[in-house]
Length: 84
Image (cartoon, rainbow, N blue to C red):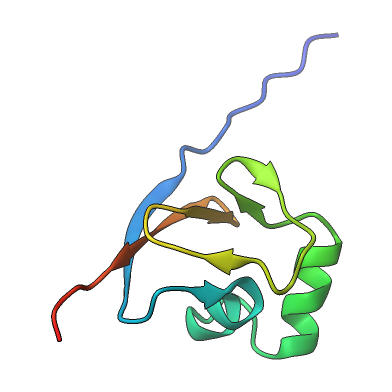
């Protein structure tokens, strides 16, 4: 028996931050991926979230310019806004 699997291509979004970094848990709440800190913690601990292509289980992971967070078929690229 053959099974056909369609892999959905990831949507790409750029997310602008004004600080040097944002913590992963805060990022998930900021983007509306997780409604609460507890839900963000579950997503991270369950291995649903990837940072730069690797599963990340550290809630406090600092995301910086150029990092890519993948969640639910969306790739979010962190872009630092250098305007003051």
